[in-house]
Structures are given as structure tokens and as C-alpha cells.
Image (cartoon, rainbow, N blue to C red; front, side, top):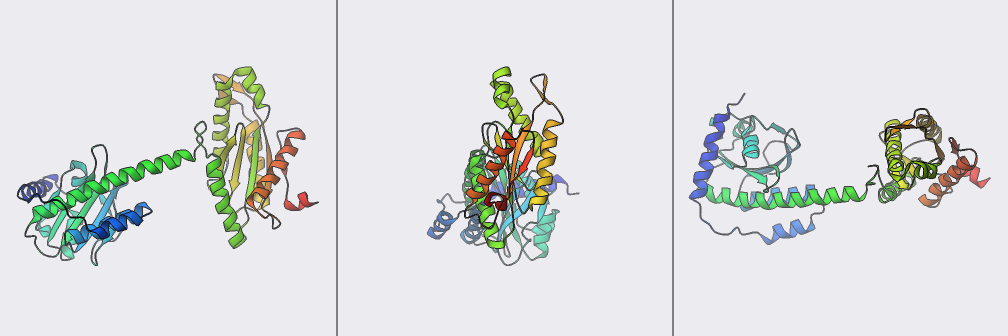
Length: 355
């Protein structure tokens, strides 16, 4: 186990080198800005920063490791010799982990003398100088940048200052990406029940449809609607009705398959997209869900309410010209389940509709 006192010296050396560094503004190559402007994913942003960090400080290798809640994982790397992508480091007993925890840069002019797993690995590969800086904003820490050199540095402070500036920019960009991903996720989630909404449904449906057209891999769609839901709202109020909807979504989620997508289509209507599924298998799932809704009361607002639902199931058919035709057939089956007595599954194939 690495003694944490070994981390103090790299921190002290980095602070001393930074204090002695010049204060010239960081010169950002136009190519770096062009690459960033064309990056369309988190991975492309990280690759651009890894590549240009290496070039800006003239390192022989540059890697970016991000924290994944338990450890640091090498996510991007530029250089012909180094630790493999996806390599992992503990946060407690490595210099990279100490940089992440402390939010301070480390300068290691003699890696072979430092007892830290990642540093020792690089020393064995021939690197003679290592600089590690944190990726952080005032409110968030993301990971570290590691720049490794086969030789010594004449002006280590300038390298540290440049990497710290790059790290701050990357951290701010990662924070924006994280916020945008959160907003995108929220835009696809029903605020009441926590399952997908119509936007997510049509995105998923188009993907599944295109996959079927390409590979002939079937999919099924199950339309679901709570029975007599208006009576629940009228009798107990909309707060209880909302609680029933949430409980229904939770029960369906718990009894459906992990690969299926549960959607609240609106009101008391839900849908289940069943990927790579034959109608026979989907029918068993639908009947299990129907039985699972009605067999146990819903515990809401200190009450036990018996709730049932109707189900309309179909599988994509060769005569379908668009995904909407498949969905419409499920709606017809759902209508038949409602008019036929509710609390049941009606299965309607393309052949049935044609007949």
C-alpha cells in the first residue's frame, strides 16, 4: 500500500515550479479550436484535448483519466507508448488519485523513485518526467490530465501552468456536456412517473423500425390503458390518481424485461416497445403484466385500491409501411380489449387486420 506522504513532494515541486514560471498567456492553436468545434460527442472532445495537450506542452504522451464514482479510468490517450485506455487507478493510493482528491497539480521529475502504481508503470516504459493536473471547476471534479516525457523539462512551471489552463477549460466543457446530457435525459422522461415520454418513444420506435427493415428482426408493441381511471380521479382526487399512475408504472417496470422500453404516452395510457421479440413471447409478457396489475391492490394515500388495465398487443408485419401502422394496430387491439370487458390482453396481427 502506498504511503500518502509520498504524494507531498510532487505537490511541493509543482507549486515551486509554478511560482517560478513565466506568466505569458497560453497560445491556443487554431487547429485545436477547429477540432473542438467539430467534436460532436464527449469522446471526441476528450480525444481533441488529449491530442492538443500533448502538442501544446510537447509531451511524449498525454492521457485523460475520468472519475467513475469509484476510481479513475483512462478515457483518452495520445502517444505511441503508455498505459492502455480503460486502465483503472484507485483514488486512495496513487498520485493521480491524490491530484484528483486534493485538486493540486503534481510534478514528478524522477518517476522511478516514487511508489505509485501508475507512475511506476510509466517509469518502466522509459518516461523520466510526469506532470499530472486536476480537471475541476469550483463545484465539480472530473479527473486528471497526465503528461509524460522521456526527458527532463527545462521549464516545468510553464508546462504545469499550460496544462492547468487546459484542464480548467476541459473541466468547464465537461460540466456543460454533463448539464446538456441531464437536460436531454429530462426531455425524454415523464416527470410524474419517471418512465419515458412520447419523445423518447418515437425516437426508440424509429430506431427499432429501421433495425427491422435492415435485418428483418421483429419487434412488438404493447399498448396499455388503466381501466376506469376517470372514476379514480373523480372519487379520490387527482393526487391519488397521480399516485396510481406512478404505482402502475413501477409495477409494469418491475414485471417487464430489462431490454424493453416503457413509455407513458399520455394520461393513463402507456406503451411497451419490445425489441427483438416474437409475438408468442410478447404475448406471455403481456399476460404476465395483465395478471400482475390486477392480482394485488395498489397501496396509495394510505388506501388499498384494486386497479386493472387493458392491453393491446401486435407485432410488426411485412405489410406495414411505417411504424405508425404497427402502433395503430396495437391501439385497435387495445380498443377491443376495452370494449370486450377490460382487464384482458387482445392480440392483433397484421394478418388479423387484413382479414
